[in-house]
Image (cartoon, rainbow, N blue to C red; front, side):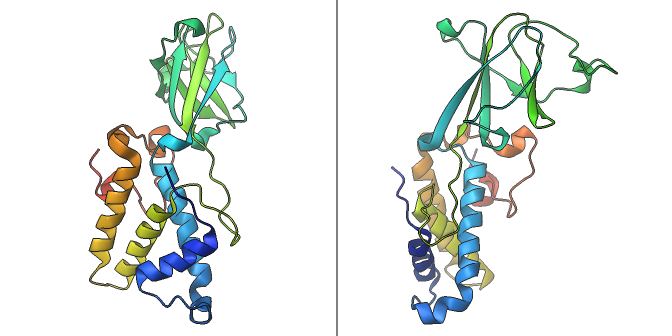
Length: 230
């Protein structure tokens, strides 16, 4: 179970992990920098992995002859990690749906799909909506699976959405690396071990948002960067 902390608690603990002074007076000049680092680290971790305890599913009804849809209120594009389709919801037989619809599947001029059939085989973000391929012939279903949305981490009283310890360890390893501290590598290893423990045995199955066509996180926080083997 992930253990969350308030931003104020995380700043204090980050100072301790990085070997900074924990007194408020001496830490005032760096407080905003530390808050930004914690916020950005949580966002990158959230983006890079599918977190088991934050998993959400959103079943979307497909309509006959319709290939363009609005997102639901539960999962938006940047929260989606996987998609599945089925022709009969009662069977429970879901087929993985790939991301990306090539130009060869679009009719020139009209933008319509080149095929109408079931079930949905692919999806892609398009103009604030999402497109499916092929165009459904019957009332089928598309299921999105992804992460719960991050809560704001701005005010001192705001709590982290992810486990606070893993955020603090990765943030402190970055601070130590900037300072060329001897224990930077050791701190990174601790962060990696804690992340692996949190994700359990499912680490290799996690999908990155880049699979969906998004850009890599700002600090290249990927499995390779953290030393996690996919």
